[in-house]
Length: 239
Image (cartoon, rainbow, N blue to C red; front, side, top):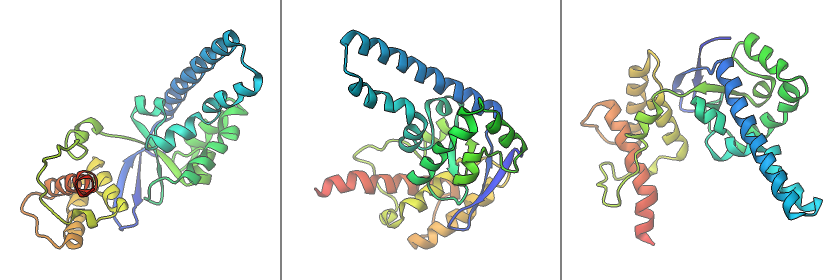
């Protein structure tokens, strides 16, 4: 199993990721399993006391069945266990992971994990070229480590005040994929991080038709802030 993998985005920017280890993924799975068991026990006690009809019990148990899929879909590729271990699911084609991709990945958990106690998944991850279990191979996904996520949220992902002053007033011409690429480049802490930031900065300057007056990294962080403000607060002001 390799430690680092490079993904080329739709904008032809290659980003290096550190792959999650087998240990990371096992611990994340155990954390998720504990949560599911706890939910199941609480659900069992409540339904027993309330003497609910069996048909009512069925929808209440669905969150356990679709646990990983639901969290990875609505929590940016992270289940609670993955959140604790600071790892997440990403697509190998550089695009945001789609609902269909996550559903396909979830379906193959039956083969990877449940049928043989995770042995197939462990062997596939350990012996594969990209650290993928069968579900990852079929869905074309990998699981990566996140680096310095907290520090980045204090900058590029910082919640903006309503009176924030926009620097690049046309930042909202970027689409969500463009902004996702910028965020991934800022997250990337590989040896070629500086070069990636410069290349991405140059591409964004061309799209926005502006000349930056700061460093490439500060420019990209400012663009993300401007985009967030223009998409959120500015839209509200127009209503």
